[in-house]
Length: 144
Image (cartoon, rainbow, N blue to C red; front, side):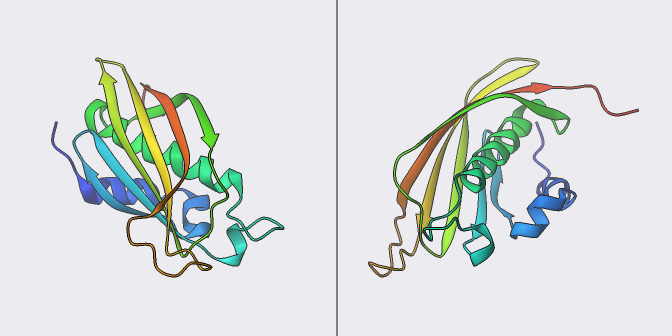
């Protein structure tokens, strides 16, 4: 399948919530996608950690883009599970997803959600794993 990075970027930009939180597609290749979100006050919960809903959003979108790279651009997540491993804090949130298995109409993907640049411990170029997710993505009929 031909990977169309500009098309993928336009799909992300068409999602209002993605624009609100400043999400961008950092990488998009066959079978993999990385979503990047700047950590700002608007995405934090009351204790100063990135809200779990934002981590789940990041995993869901990265998984869907990774699956779309092998299934085509008209896809929808049909199921997602996420495990939160530690509180997320830092300057940037990264969601790195890859396809584990795909068929003609379905793909199963995994995703690691990391934070980069922990504000308490200084720079963390390798990232700190804060959540892992798995999701199933299906092809769907285009909207009429």
